[in-house]
Length: 79
Image 1 (cartoon, one colour):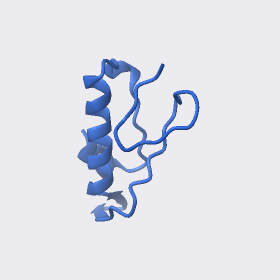
Image 2 (cartoon, one colour):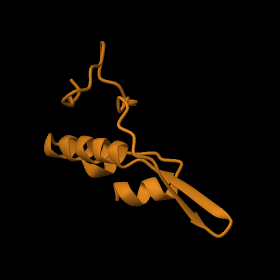
Image 3 (cartoon, helix red, strand yellow):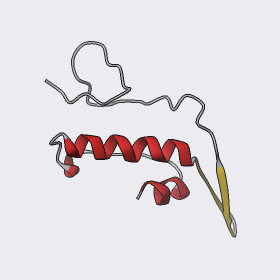
Image 4 (cartoon, rainbow, N blue to C red):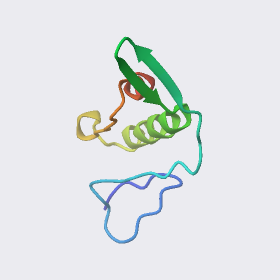
C-alpha cells in the first residue's frame, strides 16, 4: 500500500507519479541573469516542500523521492 498525502486524491493503486494542481496559488516570480531568465512560483514550491516533508515523515526515503522543475529559480525555492 502506498503513502497517502493530505489533500491529494488518488484513484486505485498508489501511483509512482503524482501531478499536483496547486489550485491557483499563483505568485509567479521572474529572474533575469544576462541572456538567461527563469521562473518561480512560491505557492507551488510550498506545496512541493510540504509534500516531500510529509512523505519523509511517513517513512519514504529521501533518495526515493524525485521532484522535477524546468526552472532554476523554482529549484532554488524548493531546495
